[in-house]
Image (tube, rainbow, N blue to C red; front, side, top):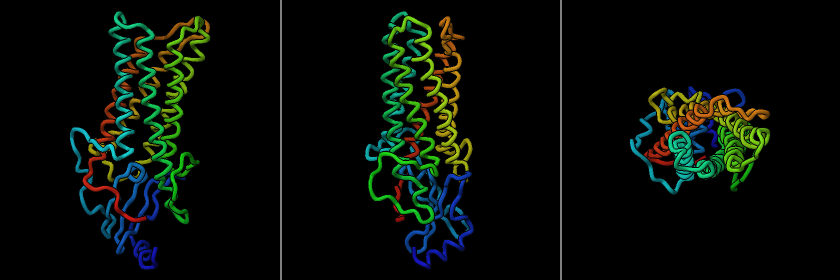
Length: 300
């Protein structure tokens, strides 16, 4: 960055970095010809453009001119992530409906197979999201750190809330792979079902809550994410609600390792159903979020 740009940036009313604890959530960037831009962690990793600011630190133009229906952007990893989450969520909804209302028409194996296939789509989407967080990590653009030059498959990006949201979610989806796959097998003992079916589901649900918390951290300082108005706000909070519902499903689906008794199996499945509905609409809106008319153009 030139001395002139550094001077202009120093005069800007906003801080160069915005943080939530140790996590960088926003950066003020100086682009070509001294223009000043706001880069947020979520927008950067999802491929959305930086927001131009005026001298008072206000966004110059309205952002987020969005489609109200859907987005088709197969050129973006973000679109594939959202679409895979939608398919996985839809299969969890289907499995829950089959279990609650159509159990006379489908075997236990068929119902659990539907869940398992859905969990594979979840894991594929979660890994795509993790790759986004690794390779578009806003923390790497801060201070003296240099922008990475090659594609990376793993990192310890502890300064990035996006990474700390994506990593536990990815691990949680893998545990749901085990949970749903093991549910297709008859263990013939309560202890086996407790250990191999309930425990992975419970831990996976906790990790989903952790993921949702850091997704909230990522937008906490973003004044342009308006409550009840912004698409981004709805994406984050629908994921939070869905994670809470999955956690309640795990609690009500507790399998006693001695007797095999379950507190309330029907309520557990109902929480899974509505949690999956929340995840579906969150994924759909995350694709709608991609409908901005301009993409990232600012040089770093």
